[in-house]
Length: 343
Image (cartoon, rainbow, N blue to C red; front, side, top):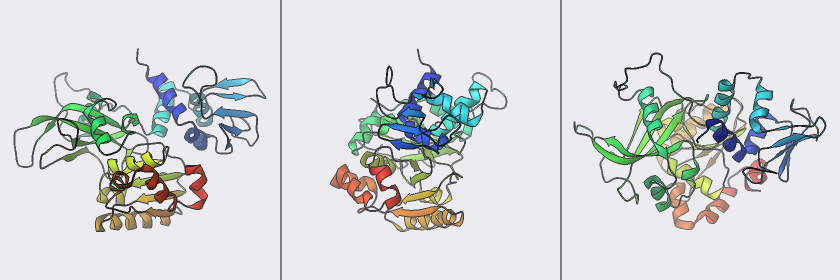
C-alpha cells in the first residue's frame, strides 16, 4: 500500500547530501558520510549521516546516528529538529518544499462533486497533475529516451497523462492526446500551474499538431523544480534542455523556467549563493540571461552563464553524448563548485 510518508522519506534519502547541506550546513561531506557535531548543527564529528548505501535495511542511505548520545533516525527527524516544526502535516510540507514536490492544493471551499474547476486555474492545474501518472514506463518515458534522456522517470515534478485534452487555437473541438505534464511550483513548493507537452502516439517525438505545448495556472516567477537545490542552482528554459544537464552531471540542482520570458522573471531562493544560467543559443535566451543575471547580482548572488555548443544542451547531448557534454560543462562551472558537482 502506498504511503506518502515513506515515499517522502525515501526521496529525502535519495537526496541526502542536499538535505544535509540545507539543514546541517555546519557539517561537511567525508567520503560516504556527512559529519557534524550534533542535531543542533554545532561543529564537530559526533553525528554522521549516510549519503550512500541501500534504500533500506542496515547501512541505508539517509540514516543518521549521533555516537555521543546514542540517538539515531532518518532525515525527516533532522528536518523536524532543525526547523522546530511539531505538526506532522507541516513537517511533510517542509520536506516536500525542499524536494521541489508540489504541495496539495486545497480550494477555499469544496466544489460540487461533478463540477469542473474553471479552465486555466491553479485548482484545475492541480487536478490535472493529480490525475496523471509517474513517467517511468509510459510514452513520456519513451519520448525522453528518444532524446537521449534517461532520468525523466525519476523526477517527481514530471508526470504523464494518456488522454490530456488538446485544442488548436481558434478551434472549439478538443481531442484527447498523450501528454507530458510538468508541475510548476513556487518557493514554498505549492503547485501554481502545469505545463503540457503533447506527444506522438508512439512517444517518438511531439504530437504533429500546431500547438505542441501549453501552460495553465500561474507561471510567472515560478518554475519546474526538477531536483532539490541548496546554495547552488542551475536554471534554464526547457525541460528537455535541463534534463540534458542532469544526464551529464547527475545530482545537479536544476530548474526549468519553460521559456525565455519566464527565465528572466524566475524568483530565486533567499539562501542562494551561486547561480548558473543555462542559456539557449538565441537572442531571446541571451536577453533572458542578462535580465536574470542583473537581478541576481543585485542581491549579491554570484552568476555564471552555461552556453551550449549547438542550439541548446539537448542538441549537444544528442550530437556528442553525455561524456562530451560533461566535459564541456566542467569547463564552465566555477572552480569553487567543480569538485562538489563533478567529484
